[in-house]
Length: 443
Image (cartoon, rainbow, N blue to C red; front, top):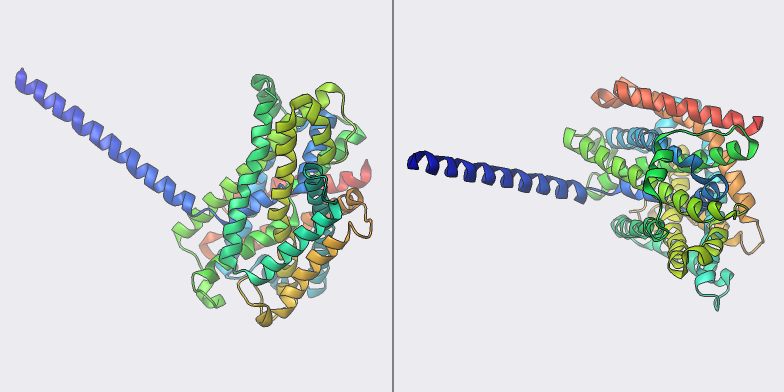
């Protein structure tokens, strides 16, 4: 009996040791995966730019919890589209624009590229206006236009003279600013069962204002500039590893694809969590108290202040500045990548010095400067945001179709073409975005 007891004790210790080793191994694997986060996380966070935050604030203030379910539905939609774009960049060794240029008539490719660049520029202007207004509200002694100039010049110098690695590291840390909106939601003490009910049960109101706002939410969540930014960041990652030619970059290992999909899924989940918390916060405070007539995130923050206190107000404002610093490089950078690949610039990329990629940096700089100047010439940021949403909504439909087509091309993608599940979700995304574009003119 004693020997049996000793044997049982030793067996239990062995099992505990094995379990501890498995936990340690799992922790190491998870930590290794977290260290691979980069392009997908940056892209997802860049989606929550100041104009996006304004859209989500308006949605929560004007429609309450009724659009929360969109945060759930659009998560797999975003993940599958961005996942395709990431794979295209990794497997082909070139960005999305270069692959589109090869797959459609040049005139059509140029038209799509120009619309994306115009929409991006409008969005940059709206984001600069949002950042400057937010900074001015926190520090009113400094005029909004001075903040606009400060942010614009700082971003332009950084994008031109810093290496890709430094820019990527800076942007990765800026994603932490989005936690401001998660913290703000907890400050207002939501009734979580009620919130989760609206998250999982779809609610649709067939009213013009509701449909228009829903289209705005869709348009600001699944936006074309993210497609190009994602694929080109994957290419930049390859270049940073020393794979300087297309031939060196072509193809991908199983582990690289798994890491990329993990990165994209985390980024898109994080992006939509922020959307969820912003809608929750504004619905609980503004909508619940009848303050439904807001147009921007600044309006939301001002209305939020007496209801949720100074902490919520400051977090909301400072988050706007951080997200703008994160999003504007993505917007202007994607324009430069689109132009560079559509028009076959000789030198291109954030890791290239300006003298080796003058046209690439000319497009990037022009996008930042035009956006920077919009507040100075009194361009209405709300109108700029509206037109960028319209253009993005229109061009996203053919772009998603082209992305699906490229991602299913066996000659281009080899074994990394779309799975059945990816195709199901990608076609659902295409149909919903096409319906939203049609509804834009129908309502």
